[in-house]
Image (cartoon, rainbow, N blue to C red; front, top):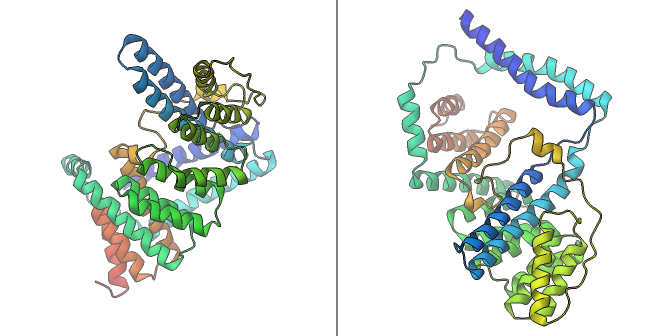
Length: 385
């Protein structure tokens, strides 16, 4: 038992270090790096790789163009996400940060101790490595992953029955359907997202991109109308110009496509990673039209956080924004996040029998025997089965 308390104390100190050190650095000033910066670095490298493959003859012109189109779309989406999150990563007020550090140093140890004495089970037997390895193998099975996703969808639907105007859950439901390859239901969920957000530009873009994917990466009239509506509300979003340019190219309106790309650059920082390739597209279109490539007027250079690239490891290739392209591990992490949210809600409302039953079902799908045992104990306490 002494060894357990020593290990618990060491783990608590480690957690406190992870929580406090970043806050201490924030108190000294300096913006935190954004996730989008890492993604943009990877996408920029991918564009260079496409150019190298084209030179080596691995790709033909059409294949290279398709690859660049997809990478640019992700770069623009990552940049848009980074802009939205910028306000959330500015340095905190030093006095407020200091108070938060003190609160963490007090609350985390006391909370951990209280939680352990409430639900802890020091007599619980260890789980053999072979058993854990077998569970991981089972979770990697496509049928198991599909069952996990369907269980997650049922959980989200149950929450939406209680609060049908929750935009976050409609968005998650649509993404979950996309991961299953059920684009029809995904579009239905995103249509509800547009409705409950009163046609917010972000929701319009999400629905339009789903229509674009469902049409085999073709900008349909319905998708174009949504992109244009989103631009009316937010004319600074480069994604709306990008898809409009693709649509103009689909109908061989080269001048219209060039104008849209120029509009895209007009709302882009001059050092945006996607800028060189968009300029290349403009130059190519001008060549086809037999005119001189126009000069694009762009925004001043933006701070792309080079310090973030030096101090933090770059993302893996699997860390992309499209949910349907997640690796099995990322899918599993997403599912576990959903289950953790449900578990947190059950701590706030421990007498919700139906909630414990849903949580037990989720733990069964995940193969989490410890969580399942706790949920079943709560169900028994409430007189359920």
